[in-house]
Each structure stands twice: as C-alpha cells, then as structure tokens.
Length: 320
Ligand SMILES: C[S@@+](CC[C@H](N)C(=O)[O-])C[C@H]1O[C@@H](n2cnc3c(N)ncnc32)[C@H](O)[C@@H]1O
Image 1 (cartoon, rainbow, N blue to C red):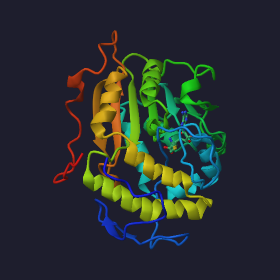
Image 2: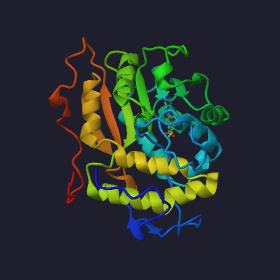
Image 3: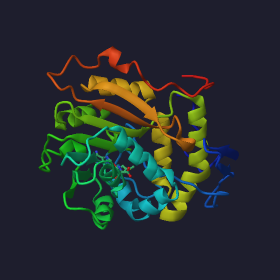
Image 4: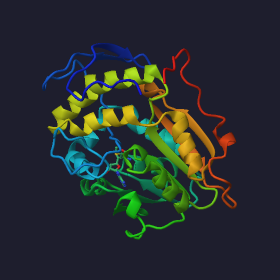
C-alpha cells in the first residue's frame, strides 16, 4: 500500500466530480472547522489490531474488538450521516437486487452487520415479504433499527457473526447480505466461511464493501472524500471523529478487489463476480457476489471462478 497520511485532521484541497457530474468542494480542514460542502457516506471499518476499548477520539486506534462500542456511541447520528449521501441506500438496494433472489417466495434471508437497518430495508426492497434476520454486534445500532417500522417476519438479534450459533441463529438461509461488514472482522476468512456454512446449497452471498486498493484514482478519491467531508462531518454530527478516521484507515488497509474475490473462493464460494456502483464511489464500493455450491463443495478457491472480475477504471494506473 502506498504511504498513508498520518491520522491527523488534515485534508487534501481541491474539488472532485462524481460520475454524474456532481461537484464536491474540498477544503483544508483543521481542528473543528466545517468543510466547504459536506456529502458524507458513513460506515466503518477494519484494521487487524485489537486494542482495549478506546474512548472517543482516543489516540489508540479502533480495532475489531472495540468497534461495536464505537458504533454504540455513533448509533444516534448514524442515519443522519448516511442520509447526507443519497446514494448510500441506492447502492445497498443495488447489491441486494444483484443477489438475484426470487421475489415473493417466502425466502429466509440474513443481514449480517445490519446496523440501523439500512441493509435490511434493501433486502426487503429486493424481496418484499421475505423473512429477514438482522444481526449486529452493537446493541445501540440495533436499538435504532428496532425503532423503525418493519413488516412481520423481520427480526433483529444482538450478536457478533462469530457467535451466531450461541445466539440461536442457525441456517439454512436463502441468501446473505453483508454490507460494510467484512472489513470489520478480526478474521475475514473465518467470517466468510461462517456465512458460507449458513447458506442453503446454491444460495447467494453479497458482500457490499469498499475496496480501493487496486486503483490509484480510487485511493486518491477516497482520501479526498474522507478528509474533506466524511471525517469533519462525522465529528460535527457525532462529537467524535474516531469512527470515521477508522473508516478511512481501514479502507486504505483493506484488500483489493481480486483479493476479496480470492477470499470468497477460499471460503468455498463459486460463481464469484464483482460489480461496482455509480457516483464518486465507482470502483470504491463494490458488490462481491458468490454462492454456495449446490452440490458437494468443490476444492476451495477454484481459480477459474475469478475470471470475470470487473475491469479497473479505464486509464487508471495500477501502482500496487
Ligand atoms: C458500517 S455498519 C453497516 C450497517 C448496515 N449494514 C448498513 O449498510 O448501513 C457495520 C456494522 O457492522 C457491525 N459489526 C461489526 N463487527 C461485527 C461482527 N463481528 N459481527 C456482527 N456485526 C458486526 C457494527 O456494529 C455495525 O453496525
């Protein structure tokens, strides 16, 4: 990975334009000043270093063990932050639709890391009437989810993915959506294997996730949006920028597209495909699709399953 800026409140200056021509002005942000214009997304992240639980804006970095408490602290402002990014929900709905689930068939679906329910709503949009189990490690994020109006058949369970069995959540599921979760896991490979084992044979997994590592342009846009918009706005709205600095850092540290797909292959998934989304998130946010084999599991990670990965943005220099 290219050298990352220090974890300080500093932003690149300038302006970026997304694929639809919307302009985002970026200013130099220091201390608690507001950026010129704010369009945050929201969602946090994964760094493979466990720490004790740090307080808000602690100099100690967040890690998988401390994340649920960090989400607890940010739960009340989370929906307002993601609402400032109109495409947040569109992209989740897109990933849910890409799972290719049959509508109206009484499917049983799992939303791992459901947070305040944005991804749960996306699943219901794709399959109205589905039975959906939303699970999350943060009690406060779940409390926000439970406050919303849900049709019968939607259930929320407080549990980490790693502890689902103990929480009484067992398969088989007809589909699993993991939106902005895999980066947050201490062991993403084990998490993917666990999701594979919870699926009915032949059923799909969609991993909706940031991956910017493969493209210099993607990393530059990511840095600019985080330091110009997301981190300052996260701090303004929630009083603490820790989760949003963590988001930035974790995406910088996370896998490239091919590596995520390879992880899925090693976990036993087949028919692995990736597609990106619209807007400035193009080639930064992706849907990684795979399914559990319908028959006996083949040898993991069959290389030919990785053949049709999305192509990188035209003209993007690859420096990794
Ligand atoms: C960035 S939010 C995404 C929420 C929701 N999926 C969405 O798209 O808006 C990530 C969520 O994953 C949860 N999470 C992190 N690690 C987890 C784990 N090991 N098991 C279950 N949930 C976890 C966090 O508590 C947080 O609510």
